[in-house]
Length: 313
Ligand code: NDP
Ligand code: OXD
Picture 1: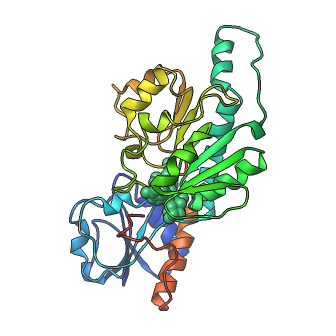
Picture 2: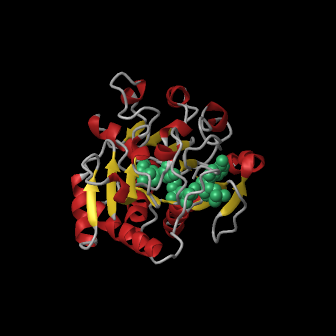
Picture 3: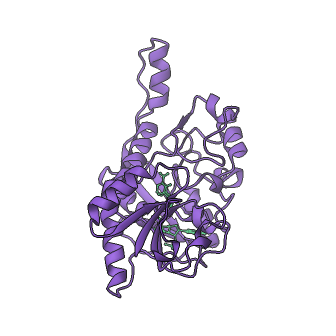
């Protein structure tokens, strides 16, 4: 039996090393250096190339090396085996840090103060309290809920939007297409932590920005996206940041990654760009999750955090 690491676009060596430490009794192989393809029973995957998994007829389970699974569900027919995804305190902590950091940068008007500093200008801006600002979280899954908890502790008002109904402490919950307008109407900082699915692709653009609260304490709405780039429409973001439909934005994810050199996003002073680093999967932390999952499957127990392929996340 062997466990395969097939991570397109990532360096597989740290994953192989971490898995060998976590599972010293198992054979860990890095694609394409596989001794016996028939012996591969588990595969850790990120964006496998078309048809790559066909070479392993005895796969029993796949594990996405990220929380998102659009890299896996997008194209090919997949082997009919369970797919586990990353839900882990390490990744959750990284994401909540990034979300809280971006929210606070906008809330505390950091972009304006940087401009003032460059101009050697000493001028204090009116500062609202966190409790005067409503954060609207699109996506109330593992990462959305963890971010909500921390933002609540900082005193922000919270609204959340999901596909199915939710009841959460301290979050006004909305769901589905019917609940979207009401959710947006009192949101000052819109945070996207949605998965990319056929339903969410291209969802966030001008029509959404127009519905955000315009007379809130921050003086204009802010958009933050750490979900996936193809959920937003980049040309709409550029226009919205140029014509004050949005006051500012933070993007970690983009329609095309790496963000092309000629993208107009690079030049916008009211936009913060990070290169898809909000919550990078950590091999050492996640090898323990994979090890637990493999053991559970071998012992006939159900895997945790299974992906629903039909739903797309
Ligand atoms: P979950 O699957 O736990 O949560 C997804 C949430 O989105 C759920 O609340 C779900 O609703 C909601 N949702 C899905 N489809 C729709 C829809 N059509 N309309 C409304 N709500 C919808 O995911 P995670 O929280 O673990 O992760 C979210 C995403 O974050 C990942 O899919 C990935 O794309 C991204 N990510 C980005 C990283 C980065 O570094 N930038 C790192 C890690 C993840 P319901 O609760 O009703 O099912
Ligand atoms: C993920 C990511 O989905 O890193 O985990 O984007």
